[in-house]
Structures are given as structure tokens and as C-alpha cells.
Image (cartoon, rainbow, N blue to C red):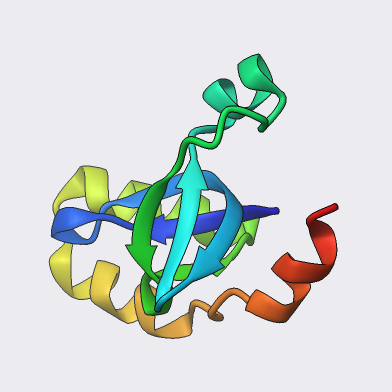
Amino acid sequence: MLCIARAYGDEPLRRIAVASGRGLTYVVNPSAYNATKGDDGSGVGFPSEAVFQFDADLFGRLRAAFDAGDRALLLDLWRSAVRLNLRALEVARP
């Protein structure tokens, strides 16, 4: 499931959520996911509260604010992000 992960320094990352557990959501880079078809068991655990539903417009604005170093706008935009529904992630996994 495509998502936005909030990385160090509030950097927005476009990722694919592949699993969740113990308060973490495991995400992979889309290029790595496509190369392995998601079957290699890889993924980086992010705190679940730092993983959000993908919104292309919001991601673009987050990325622009991050790249411009506009911290105030970046924090404001993060407040509008909607957390990823982990139940939907469970349903999406075979």
C-alpha cells in the first residue's frame, strides 16, 4: 500500500507499506519493492504514527517545503496528513 513515511528531519518519503507489528509499520522503497515483487522480507520499520495515507498533492507540497527548508510550512503540512489505516494494510496483504 503506497504511503508517506515521515523520516528524520521531517523528510517525506514515498514508500510502500508491507507489514506492521509491535508499533512499527514496515516500508520499502517502491523501486526495491518492484524489483523483488515484495517477497524478500525487507523493509524498514517506522513508528506507526510516522506513516500516513498517500496523497499525491500533499506529498508534493511536503517535498517542496522540505527542499525549500521551510520548516514552519513543513510542520503545518504534516499536521494535515492522515495516518495510515493499519487494518487496511492487513487486508491488502495476501
